[in-house]
Image 1 (cartoon, rainbow, N blue to C red):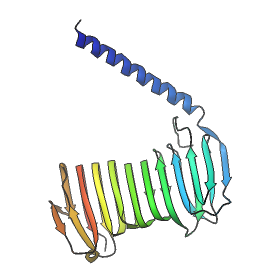
Image 2: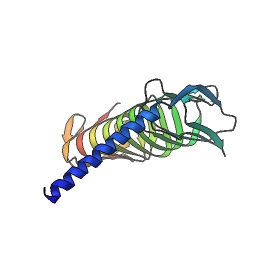
Image 3: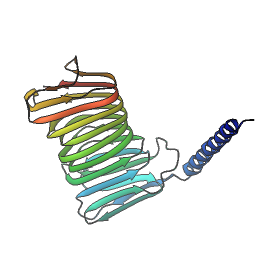
Image 4: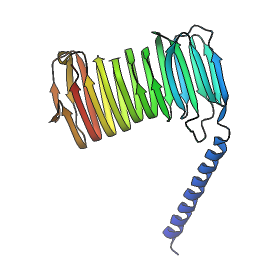
Length: 255
């Protein structure tokens, strides 16, 4: 047997063992992911929010006061210097629809900064307003209302839908998946598509925008139903730059 054949066999065995190890870890983790639902009170005055969890059903909704409720076993909830931190210290496991995290914020509240890292699952946001936003989410994401007043970075891998938004200086990085965005954009907005689709409907009037259209390696960019190449369009003060690798990008004006 030649050396390259031996090396190939050894590599195959190592990969197989690694795969088995991952499955075992997932099974072990799954047995201890959930506990009885627990409600965490929030007493301190809050200005910032940080969430870092695996793949539960995550809901952010409006209510009378701040609160956190979840059945995730390895969840730490803390407040310090006005920052509410919700962190899952052990994310290993197989998540089902029973795994959930619900955060309630006062109706109409505006954060100074929000940092969301959601590995997967389903995320539903009723309304979120913040000065600064950093968000890295996988799985399914839907926001009924999203407002960023200063700057933001949004990385998504999965399916993201923002039904209504007012976004200022936001950078989108769509790795693999889709982005559906209906919003009024201000300042510099960029969308970089890896593999998938982007559908943008701009609100606030066509005259407020300038489009900087890049190119897709494979796929096409359409503006108002017409395929466009590398071009600048419009004379507005607010620029939307779109670029990417594979898929489709559509830009339309909602009003």
